Image 1 (tube, one colour):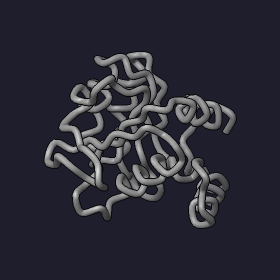
Image 2: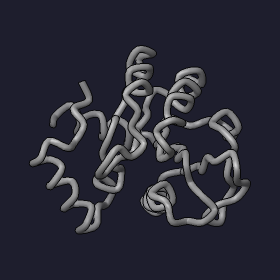
Image 3: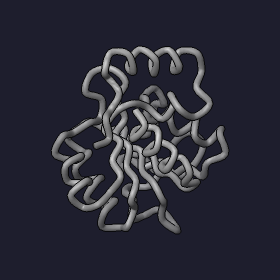
Image 4: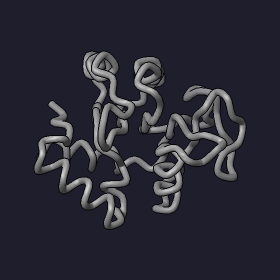
Length: 156
């Protein structure tokens, strides 16, 4: 658990964070993560190649299009998009990626996690940032439950 806690702390120490997978419909986990981070004072950038605006702000087609770049990326997309986002993160010098998951597979891709680690990135392959950023009761309970059942990532 200490490795995960340290990886989460390092990730959240960065103030410019992209959230990939935010949608115009606003009902996806990515939208909730985007709003939570923005509400907690982070400078957050939405990424979705099919949208130009989401949640009242600009949306970028990819990480490279974000003015000034970012320090960290939350991947909340289907797992098959994760590897491309990890590769783009590494190419842009972004050193921290977090693949969202609460229950089920979420956005986690084993090949994306392996690629990120091979490229020297800090990879959190599971869990949800909302379990750590001013968590509500529901997210605190999910974190506790995943912790006792072994569902939190190991970050080895």
